Image (cartoon, rainbow, N blue to C red; front, side):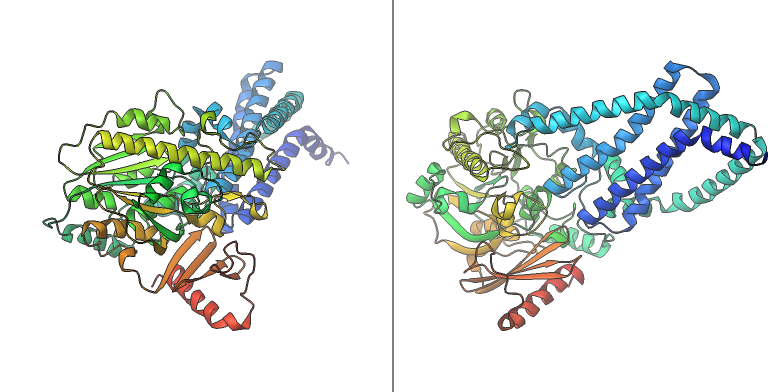
Length: 617
């Protein structure tokens, strides 16, 4: 009987701490499992993350034991309780932030993104179409509840850790033996890891482990793939061999990307509301060429923007792509980037922009002292700093966020009401659509103002202007809102318009994707496209064409045959296929994948998917 009493006493004395550790570890395990299932990460992300969790709570226990050797009393227990709450809350907040980030832009939350947006919280909350007050109130209540809980539990938790330390120190032989074993294991592990540190980093990055990706501020990844050195050399050679002594019309080139802009919500494309009066005016004057049935390469900004600039499908995206700004810089152009939003911090986008050349003029929303990150008005101030045209041609990339959910929208452009806040749990789609259409009108008026500034500085007199978007925006169809997450048309469909100051508009074109924009711009100047670009000039479009799209584990292949457009959607984790006839069913209401009459078409598009995304042929 006496032999069992000490064991029982130990279990009772350290039970509060063991109970907390069990709950905390189970909490993390459940969250990382849900995370893995929701966002279809490889199963390895679970054990990768739980390694961080166990390390954190092991370290917390060790700190507690050391503190109890020196400090006792209520103040010490409160301090340890605060530290325990911080560790637990940090994991809980990380899970919440990653759900928000992955749901809205398809990438992990990073420390750099959190830091830059934390400086602009009021403006972002004001811009969101959803009423954030219930969420903020709920979060505050949760924080207060956690604070109260840890305050109440801090004394027994600290006492349990102290007892654990006391018991541990009474058995010093076991401590030395355990410490020696742990030291040898850690040393052997370090000897294995250090020479392969690059592979370890890549493993954590590609498997989406949230702690590593938060701390490392890793750039977005689309699949776990090794560096293709041969491909890198091919791109370098393509750039070196691109002709520099060509005679061509050295027009200024202005690329305007309006974030989250859909063509079917633009008056110039026939939308029932005339929310693009400036663009429609240019259209009536025969100064605007429209491209119909244009789809983005993905439904988020990072890959969308880079697909436009580098004419690369998602499997071929990379920092070293030969981009359109590189072509123009090599041909003697100035390069000017004026970008609403934080491109400098947004997953290292600026590093992609400037891989080969530093921009002559670069400003994004984080540079603005007067406006928020997503307030397009800062662009007009910095446009004033660009010197007038002096004969050297220039390339401009201008990014607007008026139509984006987080973009600052001004009351003076609110044509359609009600357009205020709506509930996140039960959103009113009419309110969201009104707000979105107001954003389109605001973007149209900002483009008008940009044209005036460019005209005043003589950049527009001999220029080509391309207006497009990085992705679409879901506005309530099938309860979908925002972007990211899938590849349905409401998140992929975008506009593409060309303006040539010295020429009447060419005939409208049909069917394109992001990769075709840069080649078409070069073709309008009489320049060849780089050999490594995936797109083609729309001026010489074939009757049968294909385009390729991806967002996470959702893939799409579109086929144009004359005026008919077919779309395969493939979800790789479940193997589910959907097939739509977009020329008859633009809203994707009728899946004909099971129709025997389309079996051959389905097999053809699936073979295209495999070649583009699986085998890389």
